[in-house]
Length: 118
Image 1: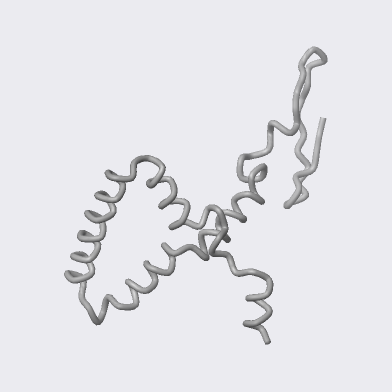
Image 2: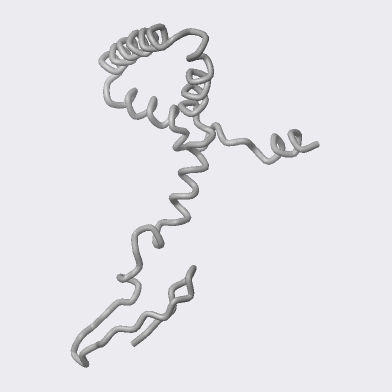
């Protein structure tokens, strides 16, 4: 049996015994199988608050210094741990979904993109 790979168009051949059942789909890699989902999550993460905060922090690093930025991170972490301790598991999940934009609420809408290009 043989088949062609999708992006590369390579011919892959393999031997099959007459009593052997084979699923060709099983031989695809996880990256090929979940490629669209990976792209979607990557696009969502690109518009997440985490990316914005990290970018702003890196830009302010030369002015504020590493010690000040580290102190802000430590204080923010302690505050976040307190919030998570009080709010429980639901708060943790909600914060992670919000910060990483897993639900897509921070994605630019079509009318936002049109306004930027005009």
